[in-house]
Image (cartoon, rainbow, N blue to C red):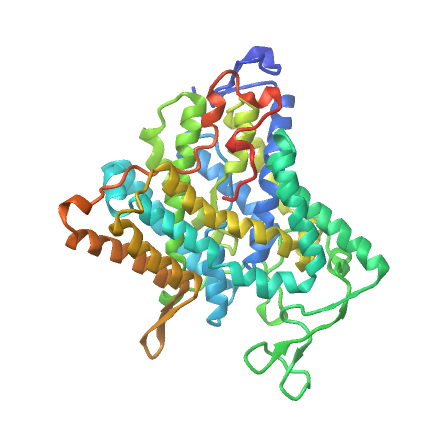
Length: 504
C-alpha cells in the first residue's frame, strides 16, 4: 500500500471505545479533515509564538511548518505520524546571536547548519544504531543541555517582555497556569494558545481605558543627552513612552492573500530571506541539536507505545527528517522545526494515528501562511502577553531537562554526574563568556554545553571504575505511555502527562 493510500476503517466513523486508527488507516475524509484542524490548533500557539520571540516571521513559520511536515512524512514513509512545528530549543541561541550584533539572516544561517548536523546524526543512527549516540550523549549530559537552554532565557522574560506590560503579563501567566492544570482533554493541551487569546483580548480592552507608558525594544531610541538616535546599543537605548498595547496599523495595511514579505532589515521588516553564515553564530546554535535528538527520540518512543508498533528501525529516519525539515524551513528564512508533543497528545486522546490527518493539517498550515493579514495579526501580539507566556514556556523547557534525569534515574550522588553538569549549567544561565581570540568568544549556551559535555567525559576518564556510570538510554517526552492502559483515561475526563501543554 502506498503512502497516499489509506484503508478506511470503522466505516469511516468515529472509532468505538477501545478501538484505534493506525497510521496507514483513516476515517471518512470529513472526519479526517476535522482531526487535521485539531492538530493545527494544537500546534498553533507555540508554532507562531516562538518565531516572534526569535525575531522571525510567524506567517512564514506557519507556512514552512506545513511544508516541513509533508517532507517528514515522506521521509519516514508514513510510519511515524507527527507534526513539525517551531522548535523552542533554538530560542536561546537566537537571542545570543542578536546579543552579539547578528540579525535574522544570521539566526537562520546558524539554524540551517544545525539542521544539517541533525540530519547527519539521523543518518548515523539509522546505519550505526543508537548505541554510539548514547555513549557520546548520556542522559545526564542531554538533560543538562536541555535545562541550560531553557533557563538561559530567564533574562529575556525579565528584561524584554515582562516590563512592556507587567499586569497583562501577570494575568496571562496566571491564566495559562490555571488552564493548564484545570482544563480537561483537548482544551488543557492548548492552554498556551488560549492564554495568548485571553491576553490579546485583555490588552485591547485595557487600551479602551487608556494607553500604557513602557519601553518597547527598538522604539523611541534616545542617547545619553536625551536626543533621538538611530541604532539601539550601549549609548542609544529604548526609553519609555506612551503607546497602545495593541496596534493594528499593519493588520489594516496587509492583504488577505499573498506570500510573506521579503525581509528589509533596514526598515525592521523580517520575512523570507537568504541565510548568512558565521562560525561564531553556528556554535551558539549547535547545542540545540542535542536537545532535538533527545526530544525526537522521546516522541518516537511515545508514538511507538501508543500505536503498538516497533519504530526503532525508523528512529534515525525520524531524527534525520526533522533535520531536513529545519534545513528546508531556514533556507528561506523560516523557523527551525521539531516534532510536537502537543500533537502527540491529540493522538493519545483520539486514538487516531492516521498520517492522513497530518497531511490535512500541513495543507491547512500552508494556507494560513498565504494570508498576510493573519501574519500581521500574529505579529501584533502585545509584549506583555508574550511576557506571561514565555515565563511559563521557558521554565518548562528548562524542566524538561530535569524530566530526562528523572526518567533515566540519573544518580547525582555520583560526582561524575553532579560536578561537570553543575558547572555547565551555571555558565550558561549566568551567560559567562570565554574570550578565545580578539574576535572570537564563547559564551552562554555554547560554552555551557561544551563544558558539560567535555568535563563529563573527562571526569569519567579519570574517575575510579566504581564511579563510571554508563548511564541509560534517553527516555524523554514519553507522551502517551499512560494512554495504553484501560482505554486511556481520557474518556473518563482525566489526563495523563501527554495531555498537558508542552513545549517542543
